[in-house]
Amino acid sequence: MRLQIHEIFNSFNEISNTTLTLKLHEVSSTITSLTLTNWSTVFLFIILSYTAKFYFSYFTRNNPLPGPLPLPIIGNAYLFRGDLPEVFFNLQTKYGTIFELYFNSKRVIWLGDAKLLKKLNDPSLKTNFPYRALGSWIDEIKMTGLGLSLNNHMNAWRFNRLRIGQSLTVSSLFRQLVQIMGKTFNELEGYWILLSKGDKVMKVDIGDWIYKFTSDTFVPTVMRKPTANMLIHYNYLTKTKNNITFEQEQAFEMLDRIRIWQKSILFFYFLPKFIRHYIPPFNFLNYKYMYNINWLNDYFTNIVKRRRKEIENTPKGEPLSSDILTSLISQNSHLSTEFGTEKNEYDRPMTDEEIMRVTIEAIVVGTAPLGSGLSFAVYNIAKNPAAQSKLHDEIDRVIGKDMNRPITYEDLIKLDYLEACFKESLRMTAVIPFIFKASIKEDIVADLKWDAQQEFFINIYYIHQSKAHWPDPESFRPERFLGENIEEHSHIPFGGGIRICPGRHLALISAKIFLTLIFRKYRIELVDDNSFSKSYDLDNRCDKLE
Image (cartoon, rainbow, N blue to C red; front, side, top):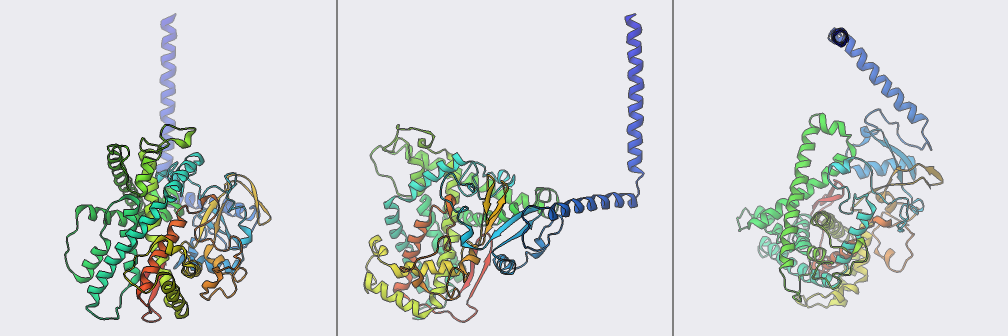
């Protein structure tokens, strides 16, 4: 009986397998028999179905707002040509202080009125808008749970914010920065003198030099590493070959890769994952950008490990340098006065990976964006001779006319008009023209209820130029920032809310040092009306300043 049952099951399996094979063969035959016309019909059906679904969602969306009609797949990308800040400024002007755009199939809300920003810029940790952005692309670029800018793990973000905040508020860091910038400016001036060949009037592209200056100043401030960007630039202009060390060459490559990293953020944010991974040439760009990210992560991780080892071998009681990297490593270590007093998760030392990401972000904001801010300030001051004369008078009054007298931190505090000039320049020419934020809970913005995970763009450039907030906004008037009441959220060059730039005070001090050093000795005039140009690439960048 067992044998017969076994034979029956075998026969049944053979019949089933034969039937399955026949069915698969029929399906395969059906697919291969489809002609080009058949495939075109299938493809057209898919496209039409997607288009119908897209526009059904569009016309039945919650809170319909003014805005250009989006297209399936690409959204409003057909409008994004030329200078993006100007594109979005013109769209905001056309559609009003709140309008909508589509990035691919994702709807984003643009805000161009300071009165609409109260909730988005809420500094409380209980805010419903704690995130910069949302999406799996943040995981792809290896920033999930790390750093500050795109970190959506709030406990990790809070820990990193606390640590970098402590590092940036050390008074010795500010005083050390005054010395470093003074020394670096003397080097910069030396190159200018060589290039001038004895002439009292020099024609230089100050913008180029400023970016090199901020790099040579800020990289050592962050991590003690020497750079030689000004020397490399001088070698390029004069076609000479002054010796550059391997470490300086690596630092030069690192800064170049930092700029590539900034470009890649736009690439990952705007392009869907499928296009980035499978559609040429975007898949090749994806590979290039991921290779660059891995290079930077490895480079900075090695620097952190080496510096940690140096610090661990430092005898207790021996003073450490005041650079940011040393501060991040030594906080709550055996070299900290609070070592062994951990009370919660925020009192522990930082890991190498955490320090790596924070250090990269410190270099990012301290080099190109700071260089842009300084370049724009020089441009706006040079373009307004009356303001430049007032600035010279204030510097002479506070510091005196002895060009060899060192500038002190106490001097900088007294330079109110200079600070007002820098703030007005940030209003006139925004370094960061817009920022994005995302909600984690349902909330009301502009009297409209929005679902959780809705993304908003704050049009800083538009708000800074709005007549609703600034009388005569096209004019450079530093006096706006001398005792006048500035409307809340109308001047936000460093963002707002809990994600406001933690290095804004350091940036302000750095700007005051550089502007004091250059306008203390020089009167700057623009060559002609075509002396200045800028472009956008995650931030506004000065391309020419002569």
